[in-house]
Image 1: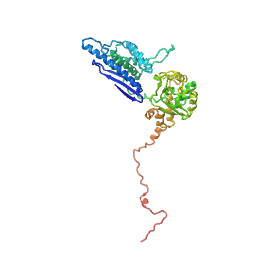
Image 2: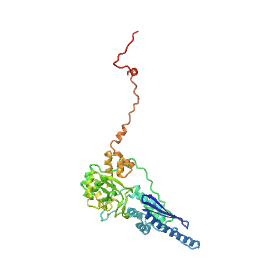
Image 3: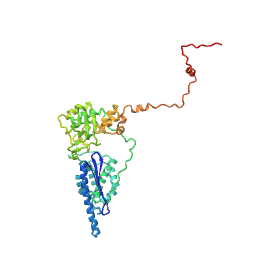
Image 4: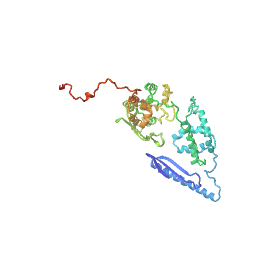
Length: 428
């Protein structure tokens, strides 16, 4: 049993027990936040491990006396994938996994259940190549109708290797649960992910940001709330999740600072939201943003959201496309140009880099490393390459020979007689 601290306030609790029957050992592992939760998890794991060990010892004693006992870990895997998913994995996942994780996995689980059906669990490894080929040929799947019964009319597009790997990861998690916890799969799953290959020449594209012509075009079609989100993201560089979790108490108009930090959220698990990096940072408020923030926080308590929303809705859906922001892009004719709500963050960085601000300053405001900013925005630095090429010199194929008519300055250099003094010449 061990409790290991992985980062500030985050712990990993794990336990290993050998199997008295000489089969697969027991491994329990969980990630929690806070030392109190870690100790509670340690106590639960210890109780579960002792119960598991006691049962296995009883089975060993019964087998030693000649009593036939079928253990859960040695019985043949007769469960089909779809039945196991519905009867065992989903009930466990709904009570043990984060709701956001379950929501993200739901589409892939539906595809896996439809494609694998009731294939025996121990035979799934032999179907991986066929599954990958099927997914490549059919591309991405979309629902034919939305939640209101209207046809979506989404054009099919090919699926990427990252999308295939995401499905394989979820399949590996389900089979891992069947082996480690449910004990209906005798051997651990062996499912390899697709190897990522280098992109084709010319496949890399710079980050997309709102150009000066596209910004007023967007605002012409936006309502007041969407315009506030647009200006807040463009003038602060905050991520969408940071914008929609910004509390009134984190805005200091006197010091002209915005603090991006963990805070309370009634929609997040455990009622708390944590930034992507886990650390807080401060952002200076631009003068153009001051009147907008004054209007947004006026009369609101410190624990209220600056932008009233439920995890981005209705302005934006952070887990997929949609929301008011996307609809404004469509009305403005900007939906086919690679723009999204995250482009506001790129626009903030692009404006600062173009204005000649150092990479280190931009990285501090974004909460990124200077190296990350250089990869995305260095090509926007004014005069960056022009200064570099000034040090280059031309090379002549034949060096120019020194002139033979040049005056001899050696004697003049050694002659220290003042120019205005007359030399005395002695006549013999």
